[in-house]
Image 1 (tube, one colour):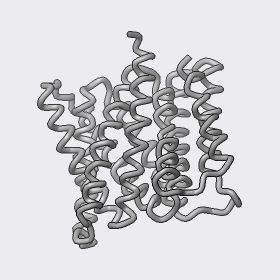
Image 2: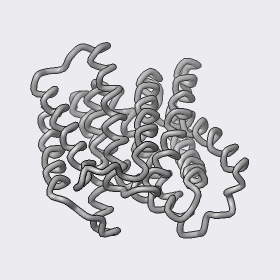
Image 3: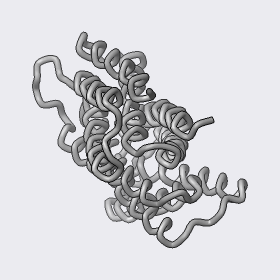
Image 4: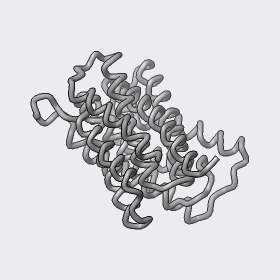
Length: 278
C-alpha cells in the first residue's frame, strides 16, 4: 500500500479519535478544573501508550527524537489544558474549530516552505478545508464567543505539537507519544498540586477524563504515523478536521444550536477530503 494512502488513512483515524476525545474532555472540564482533567487524561494516556510501546517491543528512539518528543509534549500538554478550559468556558461547537484552524495553518505553512508546494488540487483542498472549519466556527450574530482567546492559545500550542512530532523523525510512534505524554503530565501535575484543585474531580468526570486521554493519545499515534508516511501539511490539514466530530456530538448530545453555516462548513470540510487525498 502506498505511503501517501496510508498517511490519509491514519489522518482520518485521528479525526475520529481526536474529535471524540475533545468532546469527552471538554464535557469533563465543565464539571472540574481543566488542568485537573488534563492531568488525569495525560496520566491515563501515558499508561496506555507505554504499555503498547513495551508490549510491541518497539525500538527505543534516539536522543534527538526523545528531545523533540518532550518538546511536543510540553507544547501539546499546555495546549490541551487551555483547550479544555476554552471548551468549558464557551460552546464546544465554536471554540474547537478555532484551535483547529490555527493548529493546522502554522504547520501547513511550514511544510510548504520546507517540502515545497503540493499540487494545485491539494492546495484547493487545503483552502476549502480551512473555509469549512471557519464556517463551523462562525457565530450567528458575529459576536465574540466566550473562551475564544484560550482557543487561540491552544491552537498555537497544537501547532507546536505537530511540528515537534514531525521533527522527532521516524522513531516508533508509540515511544514518541510516550515521551510527549510524559512531558505533558510533568507540566500539568505541578499546576494542579500548586492550585490544590485535585479534590474537585468526581467519579463521572474522572471517567470521561480517562476516556479522553486514551482517545487523545490514540489520535496522536495515528497522526505521528500519518506525518511519517506522507507530507506534514496533508497529515495536519486532514487530521484537523476533527471539529466536525466534536460539533456533531455537541449537537446530538448537548443540543447545541446548529446553524446553516455550520452545515455548509461541514459539507465543505467533507468535500476537501478527496481533493487533499488526490
